[in-house]
Image (cartoon, rainbow, N blue to C red):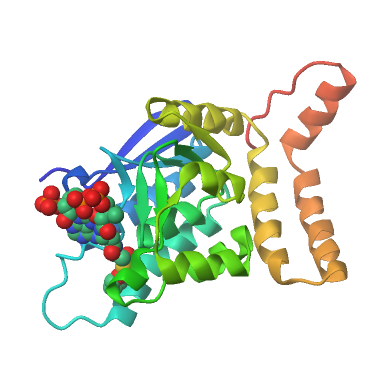
Length: 257
Ligand code: LHQ
């Protein structure tokens, strides 16, 4: 059987590709398991310093495989066992995660893209809160990420009307970082990822922790948390190298430690 998730590593960048192009990379149980394993591997392996998540074929991901639901099936249990671990792993992975949104990202597929730290999208890609079309509620973090990225009013519109949000408009709203022609989307994502993979990996990981944690903090609390993380960053080899490079007027060579 073909693998539903592909892994490719080049330098410090691991590219994880959703690989069920015949169904627009809709997620079945096997894909959810293989994707989680790939994310765990990216977390575990020190040589991996940045992750790119993309889709094979013309779509990024069409969300839950709507044909793969058989027999008694608790939606709550399914979301909790299949999607929550994936979204949580992307969020807790203390390395940058870049989505290369090569085509449509729908339902939980859009949530996967939103959970990544940065998004590069193809001009023809679109984000679709498909849930209302089939009488469901946005899940897998959609109601968490969307209002924070585009504001509550726009989030309501996207969730209620369930119309595709084209990548150029998504970029104007701040939901996408870069929009490029389709043929360039993976290249651009890898270019960004290579730059991040040569960066201060520990500091990036701690930055991610602070940004998420402080979404819910007041200013004093946020600054205290930053101060605590700064202690950890300040003890890294990369910090010493960064300061040294500055003093010697040369580019830093970060080792990710
Ligand atoms: C698909 C799918 C798909 C199977 C395209 N499944 N085959 C969590 C847990 C519990 C319950 C339910 O939900 C969730 C979270 C969710 O993600 S709910 C939302 C599920 N996703 C959707 O509702 C999106 C369904 N797909 C679409 O609306 C369209 O396919 C989009 C707008 C993504 C793309 O449209 P087109 O470009 O026109 O492509 P297409 O519809 O012709 O699809 C191509 C093929 O892919 C087609 O198969 P076929 O054999 O006819 O060529 C589709 O059936 C298949 N496919 N999405 N989610």
